[in-house]
Amino acid sequence: MTIEEKISELGLSLPAPSKALGSYSPCVVSKEYLFISGIVPVISGAVFSGKFGEKLSIENAKEPATAIVLTMLSNMKAALGNLENISRIVRIEGFINSTADFSDQPKVLNEVSELLVKILSDKGIHSRIAIGVSSLPLNACMEVSAIVEIKK
Image 1 (cartoon, rainbow, N blue to C red):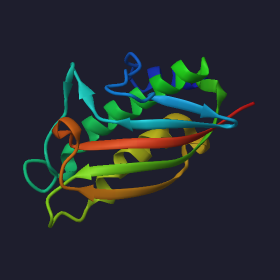
Image 2: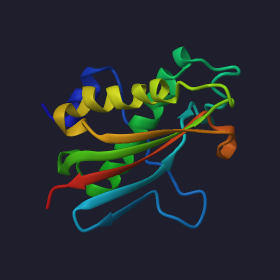
Image 3: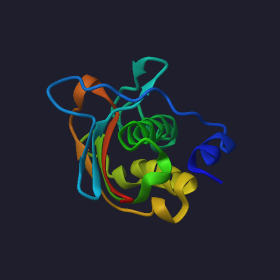
């Protein structure tokens, strides 16, 4: 089963690849790695905003995490031509918009990690870091970047 067939089997679909909002590229290929710029969750054309520990709880993490993973995969497909060119996800970095007393950033980022593994199987197992921040661009609730090893 291809990666795109797995996405479809899960009842999901890839959105259009994201566009840069400044002087950077959403993805950069360097030798055998693809570096993916930070992705914020966009759902129905709007940024999923808010702060965990304030109006958002861990239970609210699944929808924005899914949007981020699907956009990430769409960006990978645009950069690589085919998702089958992914060798593995090496690392993700998650920035979680949260209050000073919220300490469950890893639980929020688990939604991203678990979906990557569900879609990519062993290729989706990665190292990661979850960081709490006081604000993010466009008041996004989270932002995730990635490093991906690609097939040569």
